[in-house]
Image (cartoon, rainbow, N blue to C red; front, side, top):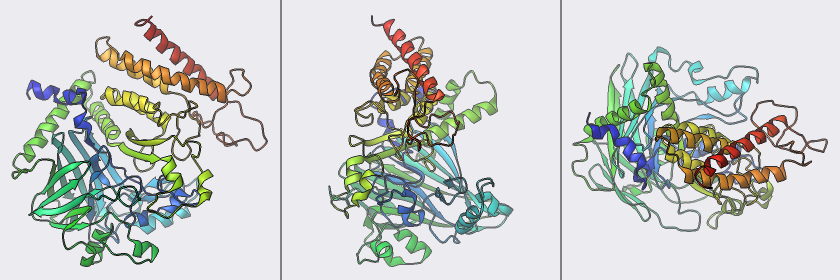
Length: 578
């Protein structure tokens, strides 16, 4: 490997323009059942938008998929769909139980693993395990509903669908030839002792921005030549998606199937068209003119026993008649650069297994970035192009956060079970992320203190289920730890500007704690769910049923730590600025 390759990934993440961060694994894994998509009058988000509706109903605030990849405004999305010839639905998104269905709450019921990733997303790899038998949707729901809180959860492995090795290992890899030139490789291994059918459908679609009554301009996806999909987007620009082999190209629109869901008349080629065309052989569901806002390349295989098949595509903003001539070499180069990057990061970690575990953990952190979009006034008031929501919902949640307008790439706790940021979890994420990508870690800490996140009174938003909730004030500690890590890695040169910007806004948050959570003005604090897991008989985020307030030892402990963290930051800044 050349010295240039040794430094390639580090140079990419050091570039101030961040062009290589434009595309990444920013697609969520569950948009249904979220607060953002809840327009009910009772606030029951899990019931308002279900998994079963998700294939037929357009999302308002984001998209989801398997092994997803998109731009940083989620205007154009890539993802995996598969079908084994047995399932009742096309597998386009991960399945799991809702909060009320699971005996221990919400729980994804799939097997998938993030295997590798670089901070610039120049190389990514994940594994999805897909049964060859019909996916046991109903069995998972029914058996978990029978189990109590003290029982073990009933998992996909418990259903027996992986017995006799009757499953596919579906590896999905991405590599970038350049900042706007993305390669996708899907490799499916049949682990069974006999051949098995498999449909592989890489999907390309645009987030629906045209149905809400603000801007009806639609992007366009069309079959421009043999095995080429042309994309025209007024904001993103023009792109070309090249497909290896001879798949069938299918097109529809990322629009709600109104006749199916609401029994009202409407014409069109709806979001669930590929499901209808492949599972139910309804060829009229797809657009015969081969154009729309959602597309896929339909590959069909009979995968040999213990054999494999491969699908390749390339998405680029440049026309390229030889799209696959350097395809494999680009993957090899990016993998070598990833190895070199982590070799430097892990130079003091001697054990091979420990390095592998840590690298895969980093991959999980990188794959868990997500485009998060939520505008509270628009969400509460409804959209001009849609039915007006019930006025009852205005006081259900988050009505005190009228300033909040989020549309950013944020590190998620989990893109299926928790596909929304939790601000105190994020602080812990950032300390880990700082080991491989301090620029991104710093940007995440600062993001939570920006005026479109932090409340005018100084409170940092908790999470979308209730931004008013109070969680541990750990952001000053995280800012200090990130500063130290970068300083130590740069021969004593830390980012003082970051430290100062953090401190200015965190002092405002500290003041909110002092003014709002110390009722008796004696430095003994209340709070909410403050993270020490000393669960009591009362909901600490709600008023006490007896009246009064609950003083919390952990709230007071966190504030003592907050004071020490801010003091340490102030002393460091004072060494450089009297």
